[in-house]
Length: 319
Image (cartoon, rainbow, N blue to C red; front, top):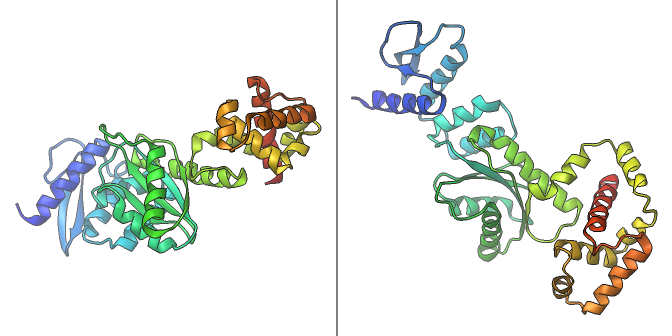
């Protein structure tokens, strides 16, 4: 078997594995469409199940893949990946990428990485640190996208992977970064949604001035739901809580930071005092003050939830 036929067999097998479509090098009988694909100036006959109308788009894709099997420099590949992450071309675009570059499909998620400086150098360093199947692309002059595939034996969580990205940039380049993590997707064809979630997590973490370097989309799901509500309705919701002096606490950096730390520490007084390097009595005094101003004792779970929602509404109305 010559090189062309060997490569074609591999490509056609990949197509069958990913889509169930059988494309053959010889006819099998029945309802099938014959078409010619060009490879190195030669016309290669192929057959696919189905009539001409229903296979039209698939045939176009196959012709493109075969004609461009040796094309694809790294910049071209990254631009192609970038277009997929931005949701351009839908599932066919993702499938074309997988087939052209022989990318195995599987469970994956996207990360949005925003380094404080030296973007290009950071992108190159991250690319060198990734496992063989993982991918990266520079999205604009501020951010880098990373696609992480998960194996059955994967022990590293998405949060840990985000920490790894931050750590390797800081230790090797002295560059700090903020990372957003999207949800896991069953297939690479859905990766655009995961990247959108990752970018949203970064944006939300900036709006809320969140501590830490790695931020998961799941942390901001409630925020995203409320963000999609018109601001006029958000204002109505805020008024319905009838906490007229909440703004006094939220505008005070000291009280706001104390409340945030307390919520982040799962309403644990001792842990919050340690994290803030604060005496427990001082913390108690501040929580009492918040209660006097707002009427909410955030040491109680129900009041803590109310305070959290009011904080989200307040930040969204001023974003």
